[in-house]
Image (cartoon, rainbow, N blue to C red; front, side):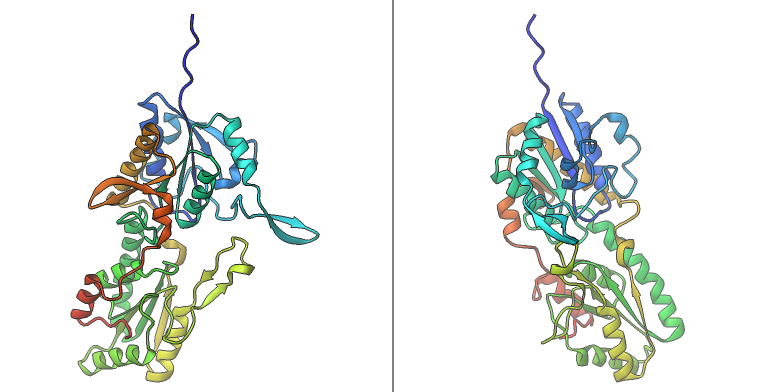
Length: 367
């Protein structure tokens, strides 16, 4: 009797910050693989899982049952475990070392035929570098920031925007009741997609994004103009990466001092509110939405997009299209080389149709 052929083995991990819809993607990968006769291994804690003998486990249908509507990721995630620059304590200080060969050896030792990496530009950048070392990689774009190239939208973005809009709606009524300026700081790192979409959809009067450096004089002018027309309150929606013309972004932690190797932005909302109060003598309050935008149950759109991307990744594995990332283009699932997707981050076009449409209804970008 001839031995049974070995089943195709897929490993999957979630890296970087969490985003609504991660579990929907994991569920789709496991279920699509099951119906093809493949087996799936889950790598816990992002790339860090490759360095822990107990952090890689089989994922069966029972493991993904009932997780479609839940936030977070059943595999947990991390943005500190870059195998090409892995942090290690030496003589009381943290240094970084290249442990990527250990990942390659672990992949080979486990007989992994494909590694599906679900992440943003950081995690997908690691995936691309591993593919250059011979690891058969497929990427799935994930980030609430919506800044990954090669796809029209990333899953998690829609839910983050809806969360921000819900908060802006609530702040709208209290701003009107107290006749205040409300400054709402949203996430997005160096891209202004959340601020643009949520700010416009939530009725923001001023929207500040990294792609359009603002002038505080123009922000104050807009507030004064509203006051002159009888509107005694204003809503200012600021992306965490927004910054004044000729100035710099406000950093909580610089990249070189961060445990993750990435800078942490934040605080521009407080800076803007203080300047408005000083110049206009109008009470201004700040709400920083922060990580609440990452959590919670994903929207219908993110559940469906996550499902389609997960199935698309298994399709790429079956076709042998390694070194590629699945994405959404013109509402169709497609794929692009990781190198192409990472070559150019997706930013808001300062002169694009969406920005112009928002300006046409009287919203100021501070320019």
